[in-house]
Length: 97
Image (cartoon, rainbow, N blue to C red):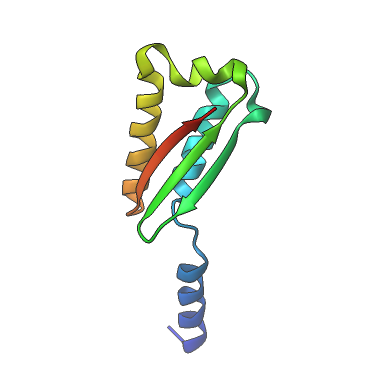
């Protein structure tokens, strides 16, 4: 590689969002489950090797996202945690009112 290509590779690593895959997976899952996908908002708090994702949905869709006895919420957390592990990030999900 040339020096210019090395500079671009380093820039990609610096500009990469921590937990981008986890965030995209959470957004996709949430919009697939709810009746009002326009109301889905995912906020991220990035740490060094971790990301905390806060999921906001419409009040009417809260039951769909949580599920009976929290089973849907737990499944969402598991899938998002696996997506985070794929990119080497500890991802957690909080479902916010």
